[in-house]
Image (cartoon, rainbow, N blue to C red; front, side):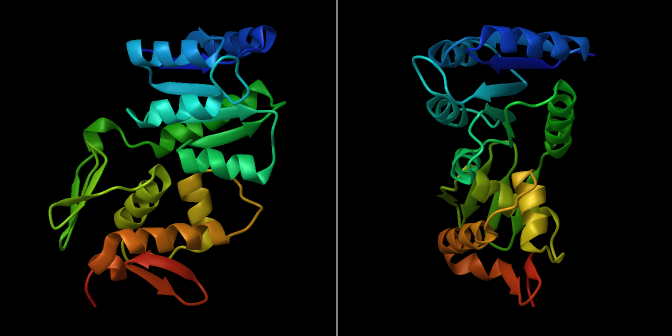
Length: 225
């Protein structure tokens, strides 16, 4: 089996070496970038299966690297940072990161997080075209269309819509959606789910009623009455 190729973006040399050593023991193939500019160049030139990305980087910061990655790919990304404020975490998830780890962390936890993220990513062979009335979701291209017109969704809006669609008629609480879609234990304001649902409904327009509010419980995706 081909090894998982990981791009490790970290400017602290000793920490980068320690992470790389542990990842290689797990059987991963690790490539290193010491600054944001190098990370962008490597990502554009190579085909990676996973990215571990620090925020505080020389030359180009991690936020900018993340934007560059998401402009071209939905490869899984875990952000690594000494900054554990809720604002930083939410901003990272808005940019499309799959998980956010606050330093210091144990190598075992990092491996567990990588495996958890990978388990949430559908294998390419299982991706498909989902159609609900006049709404179409193409998993291969990550495109959403309504009446043939493309809807421009943020990464998390897309992830939320796709999760609800694949679990149609199932009611999920806000906490469950945060855990399943954002992929981390959220201890802050649950209204982030309400905000994303509102944004999705606005963009869905005439199909906004596909996302139903179940009062006192949460949300579900439902087609028809």
